[in-house]
Structure formats: C-alpha cells, structure tokens
Length: 99
Image (cartoon, rainbow, N blue to C red; front, side, top):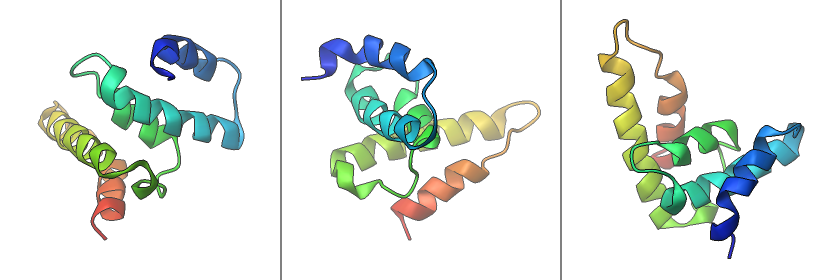
C-alpha cells in the first residue's frame, strides 16, 4: 500500500528527520526499495546501511535475498574501484545475515 508513495517517502526522509525516527524510516525505505528502486541503484542496501543494521530477519527471507544480492554488487564495485573503497560496513551486514 506504500508503493505509490515511495518517492514522497524518500523526499520526507531527506528532510530534517533525525535519530531513531530516521533509522526506522530508512528501514521501511529499504524494504520498499527492494521492489520500487531503479534497477542497479542499490537503494535497498543504501537505506539499510542508514537504518538499523541488526534488524534484518523481521523483514523476511525475500528481503534478505535481495539485500544479499545488493551487498555482493556493492562489494565488487568497491573492491574494483581505483583506489579500492572500504567494505567494513558491508562485511558487518554479512555477519548479521550469516552469523
């Protein structure tokens, strides 16, 4: 039911939100980004990195699958960049998915 409001919710998120509300909103946008984001934008991962990194399983296995795919794409992009970019936050998410 939130799909038609995805762009409006992203705009609201970038306004002056802060603290736990911003993290919770990032979690919701991460789940919506799984199906609503432009192909290759990795918005699901982007918002999850800005949200609560420990609360992954509550969104279901399809979310974990989509997030894992975006993590792998981002990892390749970061490690093949010149110069390579840090991957610590990605590894932290992987450790939450696969303890």
